[in-house]
Image: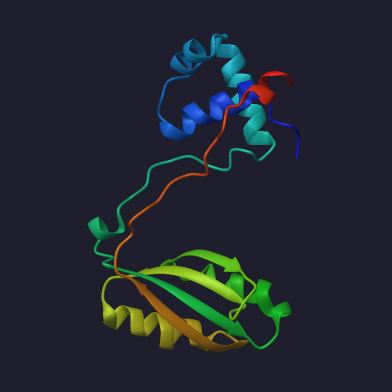
Length: 159
């Protein structure tokens, strides 16, 4: 991954607070041209520093009232990619991580109610070849959600 300079960090800091801000406003805040912002942002996208943008949809507004984390134990860790392929066909699964610790994988999913959660666990997740156990943790409340902080320090200005 390429080195990110002070201007890149400043742009990322601004965009991470408001992805919808017009580039002309970012340019004004950074004291550079709009073209420079366009080029920098495109470069950050190409370098996979910026991996996406969009709107966060509240799952509850769509009827998904239960947020659940599921620890999955696989027969063999090498089965991870095949299991991920199967999980991609379950739309309620919104995150999947290959982990260390007591589980091979940690999955985040949303269910409309306990009945759907049971169907997702028993009818889908536990039926995937290689899955030998699951442990379910229901989130009662999301108290914090944020992006990683982008620190602008004097060392970056020297780059």
